Length: 182
Image 1 (tube, rainbow, N blue to C red):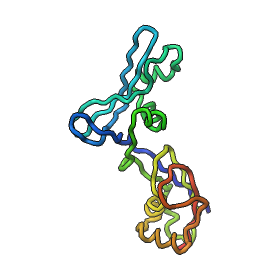
Image 2: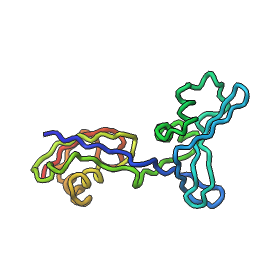
Image 3: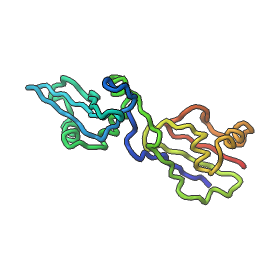
Image 4: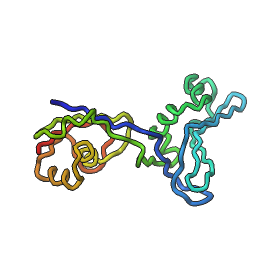
């Protein structure tokens, strides 16, 4: 039987960036935007607060763009401080590169296994889907989903009892499948 697991975000991730005021390395965003128009040009920023001192940093969404070139739906969502738009924009690699930031997903996701009926079986086939691009170690997902220690999963992997079409070392943020034989 094939089991479907899903990695779901629980909140917005921390933004890794050095604070100019207190030298903290992380910012928290709540989905607030600042939009500024100057004649036919418009700017938009996603606001983030330093976790150390509360200083505000602006992550550039677009700058000096012609009003007609901005999608009306994007502009409307940013005017209404849509947290869903903030989540989409934070995962955009272009926005991350432009603002020189990285995301810290620690404590901002959970694994939904759909129940525990797979725990007592000798062999299980699992398909893991990601609801967002959350980089997670597959060994950690397997350990959490099967109620095993990570060292035990590493041992099973080395013994060839965990089989997958993708490499299970390192971090993954895309869908994958594996078979576990006890």
